[in-house]
Picture (cartoon, helix red, strand yellow):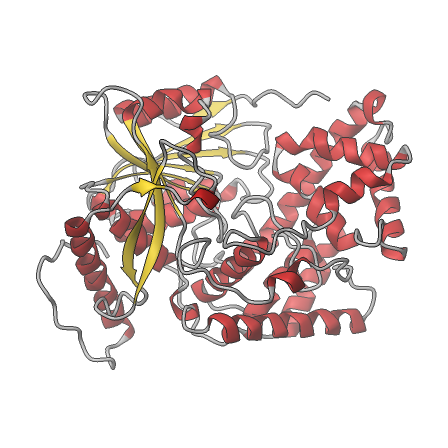
Amino acid sequence: MRDIRGKKRTAALGSASVLAAATLIAGAVAAPTASASAGHGQDREARGAAIAAARAAKAGIDWKDCPADWGLEKPIQCGWVSVPLDYANPYGKQIQLAVDRIGNTGTPQERQGALVYNPGGPGGSGLKFPRRVVTKNAIWANVAKAYDFVGFDPRGVGHSAPISCVDPQEFVKAPKADPVPDSEADKLAQRKLAREYAEGCYERSGEMLPYMTTPNTVRDLDVIRAALGEKQLNYLGVSYGTYIGAVYGTLFPGHLRRMVVDSVVNPSREKIWYQANLDQDVAFEGRWKDWEDWVAKNDATFHLGTTRDAVQAKWLELRATAKKSPIGGVVGPAELISFFQSAPYYDSSWVPVATVFSKYFAGDTQALVDAAAPDMSDIAGNISSENGNAVYTAVECADAKWPTSWRKWDRDNTRLNKDYPFMTWANAWMNLPCATWRTKQQTPVNVKTGKGLPQVMIVQSTNDAATPYDGAVELHKRFAGSRLITEKDAGSHGVTGLANPCINSRVDAYLLTGKLDAADVTCGPHATPKP
């Protein structure tokens, strides 16, 4: 799935990627024996989270100027929060989480605390969030008056004990194998790559893998809340960040003050994560067609055909050319999917992707190579596509039990590919390492309303490809008193960052006053991109 992060990246698997509420305990608590049952294990983790939060509240965060190579300019400040690797053993190994902040822009009297952000993934870094204040992002100007903007790298991500599954140079190598198989031999080759990737994760990051779960990231989030000196959390989660929010609201309902979740992962245990990825394939096809309709409507600009079918024919022609001989030696079908999928993800990509597509058929192949070839500089430092992909895989594989039968994977994806070919096989190979995962896979949290849960704002577009609309409806049912703001006839992933007064004004009102509409609201779409 992946974004359930942000833009997905080319996978190492030879395919395009697709992608206990607890009272604070001040003193020491004796840990139960290792033979505790699963229920006792959850109790231990809840107690461990309370211990870690109490410790963090006492320690606070030592804020300093951010390291020069983090790309976070003053007055943004950075710091570290210490959390247990394993919450069942809170006095055992600790890992350091990178956090950053920028103070509220209003008066001290206007300040309402910290607003903590997660952009999705799994594998996305939230450290760029305070830059919305530095760059004077108009959509967030009112909220910035009241809140410090706080971002963080979740466990395993970026600067927070980063994990890895393959050599980063190998990860960015291109071209990769065509994700759409022509034969059983092609499928066998992809299965081998997926198994090798899973083994690579275990070899390179085995100590971290059992603890790379959404509930642990949620516990980390509560420790960050405590370290910030906040009694209750204000939270904005987008994409996979909504699942973090859903699990936080379930495990720590009384620790939550306000929460906005935008572009919602379906929190049903039956969907996490195998079925969610199959659902995503269907939704991607629908949004891909929306984009093709728009390209056809703007044929005067792009010259790719006046109907969806004509534009699709051009896509298939480009794909066949790249399969026969990679464009520029590096852009094959896998790289094409990685680049073109940003159009069904984000409306902001509609014009750039169509422009490159158009240029190719006008004879400019270099524009396509420049846009779609892997970034060979993306092998240095901690924030890399390899790291993001490793975290994505580790979290989704650990969060739930995955099918181990290849027959099931083959049957489900072969069936879907007939009608929804754009992303199906690429997504399958992206997730197949979970079929041979070496460490324990848990049962997903049963997301539900607990004592003290405030009213939550849910924002969702009807045609979202990465997180289909049903996910928002499901979370709305599970969180009593929540309000669903629907952006009708729109499909960009991540709604709250777009200019749509019907939505922007409601997000402002909720975060600034706690006010929600008396009933759910349907808004019209934001402006369609213009070429």
